[in-house]
Length: 186
Image 1: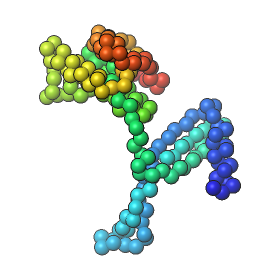
Image 2 (image 1 turned 30 degrees about the vertical axis):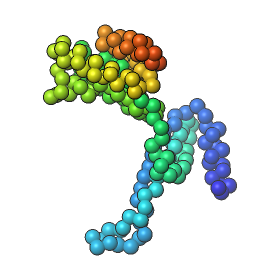
Image 3 (image 1 turned 30 degrees about the horizontal axis):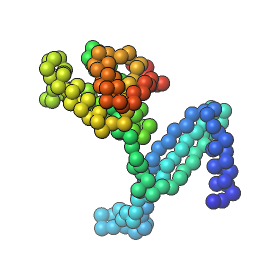
């Protein structure tokens, strides 16, 4: 590692919690520079990097750090979880909220199941029909035996359906974690 790289890593680690940090996985094709028969370059291999970006707002330009990673490291172990969030009521808002919850869970290295986003899709089950709603809830909760914990997102409150999921998790001795989305604005 060069002296400049050492400085960048040092300044990055000192950056701490004072600003904002974002992490992306960046992949790109590396070519040999020669044209193929279609007039483009042949891909020799794919390289993957973690790109960390941080800024305090005091600097005009954020700090960047690129770390090359092996393909095998792209997908590490993930934790299977059940996501509990509202569905009935303001369905449009609740779907957007559930999608944000799933994204939040994925960003934490979890493999979330939000069955209320899956089973309520057109052509699967009708949440307005009590028997079908019950079937969807039970089908989603059946996956609990594979989940490490149940995550309850509370920004919009806790509904009866969510209470049922919480109770099932407690009955099955599965950890229940309560969360709020920091960035949810409805």
